Length: 187
Ligand SMILES: [Ca+2]
Ligand SMILES: [Ca+2]
Image 1 (cartoon, rainbow, N blue to C red):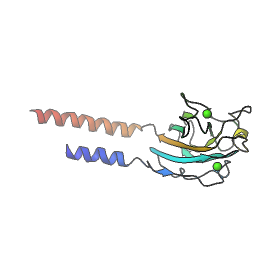
Image 2: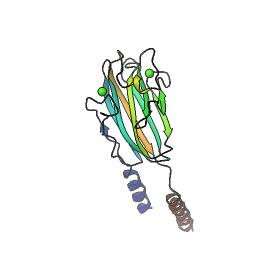
Image 3: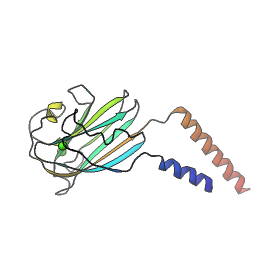
Image 4: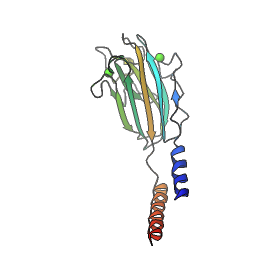
């Protein structure tokens, strides 16, 4: 059982990140996106304490493999999660139209997106401040943004791969072995 615990622990430790990331200005377009999350190998999860100022946007470049599940959530830190009021979208490298976008998720003014990649490639998470008018699904809402939101927000990003058949088989064999071991120990 001790060996099993070590195997389980090392499996957990192999999750790539759980590190803090930050932003380097300017990161307000796809071309100037921060690469801080780019080298991560799925599964990974990171959190950053970031900030918006008036007209500011924050772009982060990530790499997704087909089938990966991306989850990204912003938490505004001021006034019971309503300031700054964020809007978040996911873009590929060239389209002006967001793959997914969100303004308010839940009761606060934070945003959340979840998406399963249908193709391997580079993607961009864009966060900006809310303004009235404009299309939240268009790149122009984020690049060259005009808004008056400012303050700190927390961004958590995680990417989980779809398990490969081989690793599912290995997991199944391991579980079957564990059941066998417990049966033997009981006798
Ligand atoms: Ca920025
Ligand atoms: Ca919002």
